[in-house]
Amino acid sequence: MDTPQLKFNLQPERRIFTVSDLTARIRDLLAKNFTDTIVEGEISNCRPAASGHIYFTLKDEKAQIRCVFFKSQQRGMKFRLEDGLKVTVRGSISVYEARGEYQIYVESIEPLGRGALQLAFEQLKIRLQQEGLFDAARKKPLPLLPSRVGLVTSPTGAAVRDVVRILTRRFPNVHLTLYPVRVQGEGCVEQIVEGLRYFDDKSAADVVLIVRGGGSLEDLSGFNDEALARAIVACSIPIITGLGHETDFTIADFVADVRASTPSAAAELVVQTRREFDKHVSDLRANLSSLMRYRLMDLNGKVHQLLGRRGFRRPLDILRQQRQRADDLTSRVAHALRARLDESRKRFTAAHLRISSFNFRMKIAALRLQLQRWSSDLGLSAERIVGTKRERWERLSLQLAERSPLKVLERGYAIATDAAGNVLRDTDQVSVGDTVRIQLYRGRLSSEVKLKDPKK
Image (cartoon, rainbow, N blue to C red):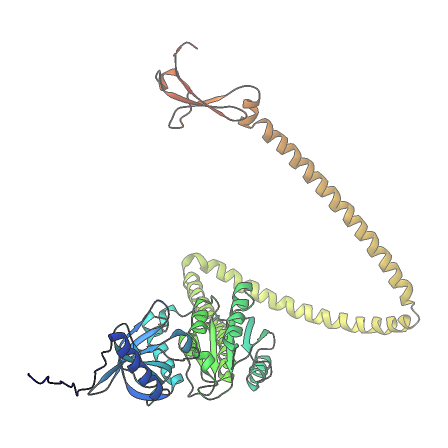
């Protein structure tokens, strides 16, 4: 009898994973060990989705990894993501199971080498410049003589004091309106935009100044906002910006109609327009004087030319004789005036003595009474003249109305014209079937010629 043989399987049983199970275990492994990971690299294939999420790839010289930046995590981000931008991202690493790809769920992003505010400033500057918002051709000229100046700034800062001091000292009759706003921090952009809309909607200023003192890039970040830039462009009133120090530049400066280096310089620009106006008036006065002198010289030359002609020689002799006679009369008049002056001096002395006892109050009362009587007579005379003129005007108006063609139409007559507007006086001017327009006293008629009767 054969002895039975026993067989033993010494290899352990292998576990078989499904794709979903394996992917889930890898996901759990990555999520457990890479919860707060910081990765540095260059952005490529940046693709914003309609949902607001941003998908991109982070790469270096040897590798790359996909990244997802959800819309909820983008709150407060100052700059835009774009290809070629080197950044540092912070987030957790997990697996997108549908495609079996591991990726970074980004929580925050910071640019390398440049701050977020500086990068946002440069990106917005390039974008608005490409749209043509910085072009000098679209900027509005400053008014020559502004009488109303709008001021959008903080009511407690040093900038508003400098502007008010300069304007009131050099331009005392200016009407200055302050719209108080915050010039940094949360809500400052909305307030400044609202201030510009106030002046624009109410046409409350000829020029608007947006000013604030110096500060860091963070302090001036409100003036690098796209909404404020577009509000400045949309404003129909010329805008001058005086933001920070001379070396500070903001997006608002680039889109403003005129950029001043400081708040004080912005006020000086407004005053400068007044000085230019005064200089223009002075130049016109000088030109007018020069033209008048030239004109007088030209006319004087023409007079001398006329005097040299034969026709003026006889009048010139007469004129010379008259001049000599005038000198004789002047001498006689001077002698008589001296004698009269001596006599008047004597009479004055005597009158002075009489005046000392003269009652001026009675004389003034009499003169006042006489003046009232003359005023009354003058008023009556004016009323008579006006009444006469009014009667003549009414009579002429009545005659004009009686001779008016409309008066004839009122009595039942009518004026017939052809299609071209020619007045019809003969039946030969129209044919049967033509359209004839008839002007009545009230209204017009349009009729068709059915029959012609050439008899009068």
